[in-house]
Image (cartoon, rainbow over all chains, first blue to last red; front, side, top):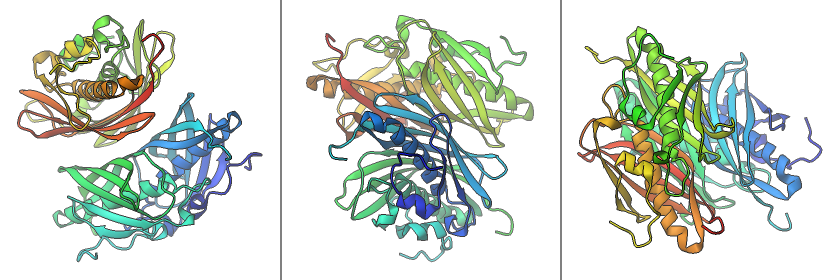
Amino acid sequence: MTPERDVGPSPFDQLVGTEWLSDDPDGAKARVEVRDELKQPIGLVHGGVLSTMVESVCSRATALAVFDAGMAAMGQSLHVTFLRPITAGTIEVSAVARHRGRTTWVWDAEVNDAEGRVCALARMTIAVRPLPEGA
Amino acid sequence: MTPERDVGPSPFDQLVGTEWLSDDPDGAKARVEVRDELKQPIGLVHGGVLSTMVESVCSRATALAVFDAGMAAMGQSLHVTFLRPITAGTIEVSAVARHRGRTTWVWDAEVNDAEGRVCALARMTIAVRPLPEGA
Amino acid sequence: MTPERDVGPSPFDQLVGTEWLSDDPDGAKARVEVRDELKQPIGLVHGGVLSTMVESVCSRATALAVFDAGMAAMGQSLHVTFLRPITAGTIEVSAVARHRGRTTWVWDAEVNDAEGRVCALARMTIAVRPLPEGA
Amino acid sequence: MTPERDVGPSPFDQLVGTEWLSDDPDGAKARVEVRDELKQPIGLVHGGVLSTMVESVCSRATALAVFDAGMAAMGQSLHVTFLRPITAGTIEVSAVARHRGRTTWVWDAEVNDAEGRVCALARMTIAVRPLPEGA
């Protein structure tokens, strides 16, 4: 999916291999194909990949939603609870904006493997601030 | 620093560019040089890089500390509070194991930029479980 | 609702005034009537009341669910995100067990006011451990 | 200790029995004597008591520190990791403001029992906002 108004290329998401599926605050989604360079020493996908995907999905969807109001989005707090390791297939993150306030958005996210099992749960708080002038 | 008993190569840490400085549970440390491919769309280091570094430092130091007891370490919960963006220089994570229990280790970590400013604070809980047989 | 197998009287919940509505892991619930002694200095319900209710609902429902297997439940981590103050009426906590593992249960909880507005979101992790002998 | 400029009586802290020891952002402290009505069903101090104390200490110290600038303090996020149960003696919370920003203060807190053992670790984020007019 290519939103008409994009947030621009994101080098670290490209390094991770993130594929954007939806920027809808009621169900933002992204997916990554598991590959060896995303793993930690004992062959599981590194938790940092999941953390990165959660932050990207929530930040991007917030940024797109508040852009017209002249606001920018910035990660303020990320809390991930890891439930089940992922070793192969795909990693999919789905997130819902539970609070869309003037200064913060608060998201629930979950991470699923290719079989749809819940592998992690996350809460992300995004600060919403005026765009720097000239941005 | 190369510990005598290592946890093996970690592909995602290599992708990020993590340099291990210490595995001491009283002051575990790692460092990453900022480069463009670690950034998000508006030129700041992606929060996922910081989350990855925190998880790696705490997991690795726990794994090394419990290995002789036949135990393995696995990330259970990561909570990062972002305080200040990083755009250049180095990212350094320092972590202290505040609780070293039979089933969980709990870490405090902070992320500093090249000027030593605190850019993020984190709490990481690592589950300690018996090593799978044959591992 | 009075479960047949109860976890016994809970003095602090009585002090707070907690009324148990359901111990179902798919929708555990409790309610408190707002009264002045639950407030902080500027007249809002103290966040600690909400934290207490979340912990009680999740701990109690886990304890009842694992009791027959000879296990006990103990709070391990509570993370509450406060979204909107409560000043009057009722406070209702609803919680769903998202993960029911061998050693931990992980809950999502939300706190609503009398108008049904979401006033806080919480994630609670409960450790599940063998009951002490003789308990 | 009675600060010259107080935040006013706090009914829920009185119900819990909180004794204020310091409002210094470099080492804010409060203490509660354990008594039966603070316990959960199996005789441990309820985690909600610890959560309440952490929130009170951090909120109060922030409120006092920002009052002269015409600002108010409001709990935004509380994350408590429980490490060791408390059954008797005293509960003491100590907190340090690690970040004192324009819109948020971020605190590290720890909870100790009468023997000085660390029983819980907490991270509290306090939102700093303009005082309502007339307040």
